[in-house]
Structures are given as C-alpha cells and as structure tokens.
Figure 1 (cartoon, rainbow over the protein chains, first blue to last red):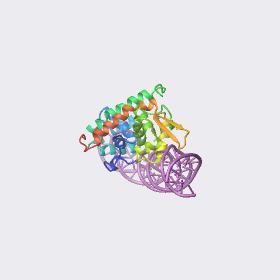
Figure 2 (cartoon, chains in turn red, cyan, yellow, orange; figure 1 turned 90 degrees about the vertical axis):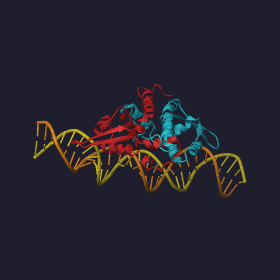
Figure 3 (tube, each protein chain N blue to C red; figure 1 turned 180 degrees about the vertical axis):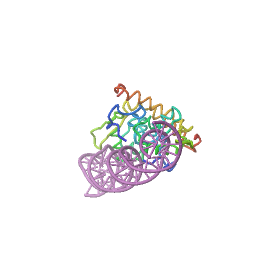
Figure 4 (cartoon, each protein chain N blue to C red; figure 1 turned 60 degrees about the vertical axis):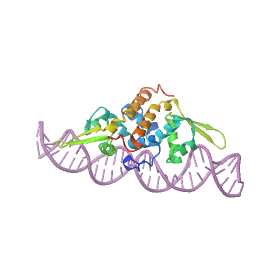
Length: 116
Length: 116
DNA sequence: GCCCATAGTGTCAAAAAGGATACCGTCATG
DNA sequence: CATGACGGTATCCTTTTTGACACTATGGGC
C-alpha cells in the first residue's frame, strides 16, 4: 500500500481510507501511542516496543516525521541524544489511539469474553 | 507483519499492538467502516471501494471473518448472493472507526487547516 | 587498549502484500 | 448462441515490508 509521503493528495477515497494511509504499518500506531505518554528517546522507544528492529523503528519515525505527526529533536551531544515528541497534529490522533487501546483491552485481553 | 489468524495469542505487546494486528492492511478498516452502514453484498463493497481488487477484497473479507469481526452469509441462489455483516465484535469497533473518520475529516480533507 | 552506549546507516535477502489477468458455474437476457 | 451478472479462484508478477547483520563516530569507564 502506498505510504503517505508518496500518495497523490486528494485522489484517495473516503476520510477513513486516507487516515489509514497515514498510519499504516502497525508500528506507527504503536509509536504514536507510546509517545502519548510524553517525549521519548530512540532507545527508549526500542525498549518499549521490543519486537521492532532498529531499522524499522528508524524508518517509521522518519515517515511519521515526514507526515508531520511527530517532531524529532537532535541534541548535538556525545553520546547522541535524539528526542521524539508528538506534534499537535500527532496529538490530535489521541482519540483514535485511545479508542484502539480500549477496544484491545475489552476484546483481546483475557478470554474473548466480549466476543460475538 | 503477522496476521491475526496466525498470531500466537498473548505473546504480543500492548493492547494497541494487538488491536493493530487484527485490522492491519488498510482495506480491513475501510471494509468495516462501510459495513457500519449495514449489510452489504460482495459487489456492493467493491463498488464502494473502487481501489480494491477483487482478489484483495476476497482475501480481506476472509480474514475479517476468521477473526470474528464480520459474518458471511451465503444464500444458495442463482445468481449467487453473499452478504457481509458486522458481528457484535465487529460492531464494537465502531468507536475506533468513527474516531478515524473524524480525524480524517478534520485533518486531511481541505487544506491541512488543522495541521501543526 | 577494549568494550559499552547512543542513534543511527547500509546492504542483503526473505516474506508478505498487493495488482493484473484469466477462468469457473449458473441462469437470464438478447 | 453469445453476453453479462454474481462471487468468487488460480496464477503470475511486482512492490513493499520486514528482518538479520554489519558498520559508523564519539566519548567514558575499566
């Protein structure tokens, strides 16, 4: 599926479709969700999401940055220090993120108690 | 990324992560969203989502069914008639779906007026 | 001098997703 | 008889995603 930074704007379908293009790949959602808790450094994110590889995390962060959902701040220090924060646009996704978390908690956690 | 029907349950990360595994691939979200409006037949879905190919739609519908989010009803008629409806579990995703739609409307529609 | 941490990049390769196209059976229509 | 609708399959191919692994620079600790 085409990523946001590659999409031709406005050619897509409905709002849901376009929203999905921005946040596809499960990592993005998870990264954004973790960042809801506040600014995080690169390796903090890695530790919070153990299943993501370094390369993937870098890649997803770049795309999120390109789509204006997060802000990347580099401190010219040694050792390097890079911080990631939600932009206002990214923070505006909070309802979506929280809706997902709540659904996951209700529907996936224990024993499918909620299932149809 | 591993699809829901293939995942080892419980080994995943947080609720958001597990929720994402269920609905990854942008088509699923869109299909579910369209089904919020009521039962639809296969070709009705195709027409509502012009950018999805027949093969992809079939595939996504099978996965959604396997994950218990939709119900597939076949009427033994000629011509064939197959209807797709949200299951209770699928309908419980409504808040997530609506949150996405609202975000898309607010953030993607006209001219990035909301952007950071 | 050697290893550690930080925050990456580069390369290779496998796996998955997605697209294009053709085909199926059945019945109705023309 | 040919065509079309319906709801798919089957096959092939390309693109995208993902993973594994090595490598970088710098400075601090031992």
